[in-house]
Amino acid sequence: MSDKKTILIVDDEPDVRTFLRSLFADHGYETIEAADGAEGMSLARSRSPDLITLDITMPGQTGVRSYRQLKGDPELARIPVVIVTAVGEPMEQFLKTRKQVPDPEGFMAKPIDPDKLLQMVAELVGGRA
Image (cartoon, rainbow, N blue to C red; front, side, top):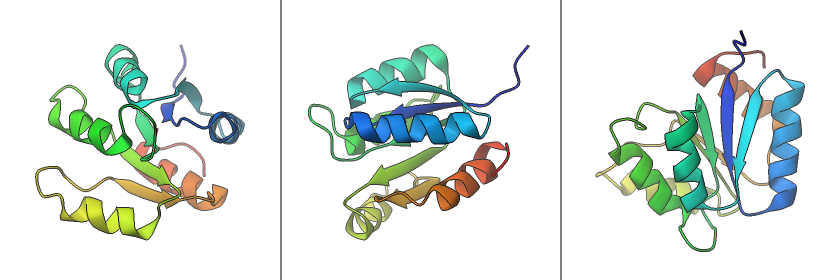
């Protein structure tokens, strides 16, 4: 029986997925990965992760659309989402103005600060920072 928390990494950049997978694995988390928003939604539904890291700027289904779908789905809305994006503060302010969906539980601008991200994840789902 594993009590490891599972993190779904949704990012179109393979290097970012590799970095996050390694970072989380080194700190006791299981990871699953999606290269776009549609795949991320499918994995969120089938695997019910404990937390999702979500890139905003992806081809196809954007992270904003995926975020709206996640928070609009009663089965998935409970999953904390950490937005991870190169767009930074303008995107954070934009998301906070969208009143039809709740604010993301976390926000991390790229380049990613590993210590800050791990602390954020630990606060949201437990585990060691």
